Length: 306
Image: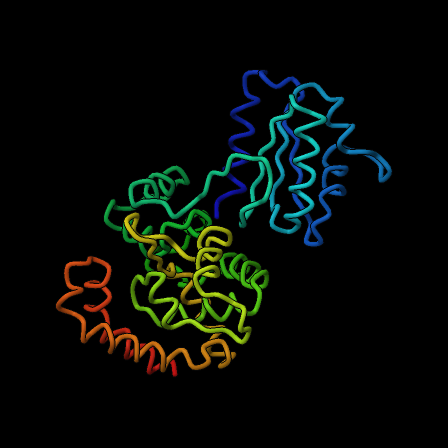
């Protein structure tokens, strides 16, 4: 989130001093993922033109492809061809999901408080430091949410009256949700049962999907690394949590579709009870201690959801 603004700013910075005589070319993929059509539109070419040949013939150019998640396979194939045919081309791709392409990946995550405050101030949001920090925390430091909030404040909205759900943010989350397969949607909904962080052992114990071949560990890693809907919280052992905005959105989907949670509530309560009996030997492990301390609240949350 915030990817589009980042790649556009990067392209402007690269071309500012004339180092790329071909300038910058921005192509945003439409919903159908037709990357060739998007590039032809960006380059002003007719429908029969070969975009790879056209880009190879240009002076050194910065090519920006945005919304690549709409056609990840087509974008990956195009990038591979461009790397061969147009080696002088600098390619920047923005996508909500990781691409199988010969590119250096730079994952974007939530901003820390100070960076979030700096972003709000850069967008002309004037308020006390504590109020700005609270605003960053409230929206999980997500650049897209902060961008939208800054616009609302500039238009006269009071910080205390900002909506908890921003429509543009909801549309972005809906797009990400729609791109998940059914098993991934079920695993993500079941992740809302955890009030705090959970690890891969927790996922194996609690998560289940309609498909027998859907493996929770693989799905959790995809949700974190490819779809960016789970945040990694510890380096020592893979651990994850749902950001507040994502959790609120997914909980609403689970209320509309009982099958998303399925029998996970029972498995979750059994799991909490099981590690509670092992509390003493597990107490030295930071994540397990945090999960145990959160267990009662989490169990109540699960029972309420069920």
